[in-house]
Length: 419
Image (cartoon, rainbow, N blue to C red; front, side, top):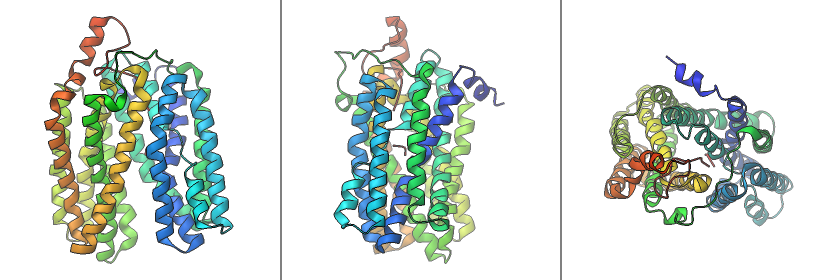
């Protein structure tokens, strides 16, 4: 049954770069939580903690696509290693400033320099290079990578809370820094699987000017809104139910449902146009999240969150594959990074909107935002469907051209924080 996953790791070096990348991307799921706990514990202010975390996220949204653009131009090892080193120095400075009670502005300043390179994108870029002529194997690889993302966001926050509470407030941030630097160094050492630098296509627009990618980025923004609203609504609702400590379990169950569906989705041979599958995935997300309104106790909420997560990974796998098809190989890391940062921006937006809804109308109303955001994402994709059609024709265009470089707006390519 799982033969496709066994075959996935047949190429030499594939297991090594996957494990290396996993260490680095696990760190990405730890930074936000660890920063909040560290600052709140040492400065006794959740407002300051949230603000510092928000500024760090804003820096990530701006810098990660630029780091990824440099990776496209100069290669993974030449760019990711110094970027990870700068990130480590920024993290050390942030921890020292928090520990030694320096002025609050120093926390914001040091947080700006702690952005790590997009490890998940670099791993996906290697898979896309290895399986550039094998669409089914690339589908399995993308499914596997999305499952790993879900695992990271289950394990990372739990590990962070344990480290910060059992050891010392800076422990979560310290371990995340070590994982980022160590994982990036190990990934960069895998020279045999590093994608070659592609010559830029002079006829290809910049990723942000790519009409199909523009639609995808807007869709990612509303998809992120789904996740951000669910997280905050779950925290508020479990507190109302009198079991606030169960919030982490509830959120993890959504990720677990997503991971299970992702494993199964990787075993399916995709049929039909990829844009049609993408639209069906968004519709499924909206449908599966609607029943969350029926949760009347903790047990029913856990079950409904697990079910709600089951459309996530298939939709995300399809959407990431579309990004890979919509941009040329010479822009793959930047294109993937833009997708990830749009998702992160949506998570922040979802948290903010859910916070307002919960404060004004009660915790349960926060669960209306998720299906609502899924519907908006679906409408955006339907309205922009013509721009996305290039993803349907990408493989045929490449075969006609007889080469591995594919035209702008229809490339099956190689990729780029998760996270």
